[in-house]
Length: 389
Picture 1 (cartoon, rainbow, N blue to C red):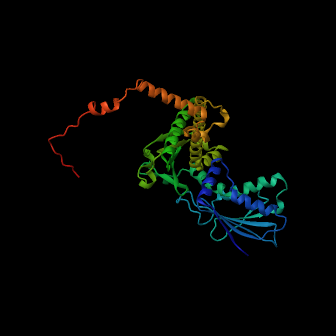
Picture 2 (cartoon, rainbow, N blue to C red):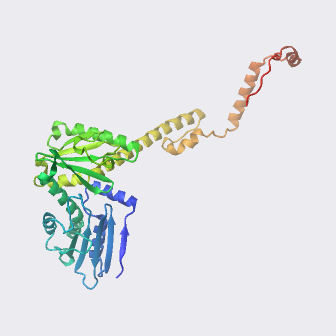
């Protein structure tokens, strides 16, 4: 049995994160692989591993001799080092997974070696038609459910261990290795703090304007029920004592105050998913804003080029189609057109008129007289100068 390994490149990972910014919980690569097995005309022998950003690993195993069952193993990193999955997933996570089509998805215990979770999928019980794609999409979102359950436990459970010398300790969460964020649990509220980092200065400017606008909108009366948002260029007091590498940013710190009403009922799942994908949402917004500005600049340049090209053509006596003048006509503006016979004749006549104006009367021998008597004498200085190197 052959094994296939699928690695995502850095650019594919960035695209993957952009898809996550659109709140797509299902893994596209896992969904595509499961649909390929389900829609195959003949049973497929497969033993494939998929690796996604954030050190997430999937292992899909199917047998041609037993096409009814497909085994899916998942390995996902921990959001926080304070939570251990060495003994398996938590009880709340297990209940959540069992609630996803329990008649088609079975939780295998113990899990395969090196994985936190192993599922057995019964493809014979998946209905035909559009419903099959919906069910497989929900199965492909198992990894998002595991991470959401971890954060749910942190937002809903506040213990005495969260305090140290009268202050609440921040919990460092790592959804992406290069983008950690912090959660500070308190009895009356939970504060989520995001250190923002950007590679380009233009992204910092766009993101800063976005954060300030987010603060203004969040403090208005129309959005009084949403979590309070605050942005600061320096670390907030909740992060005192953290490592310097986690506090070194160029985009400041943005925090959200999550109240108990934000984690009740169905709001809990939405709040958790928005926190996990806040980094991706900000970068997606920055990228779209930068693209919008560049399109407006190109459109403005195109309009200016059209005006200049039409004006230049009218002066030269040419007729031009305004639609044909654009950014591609810049070279034609700076290039000089070849003159025809009429233009050459006008130039010769104009040159002759200039010569007549400068010397309307010709005097015989005047040049010899000017060279002899009207030349400026040259004076020599008694001082000598030495050239300095």
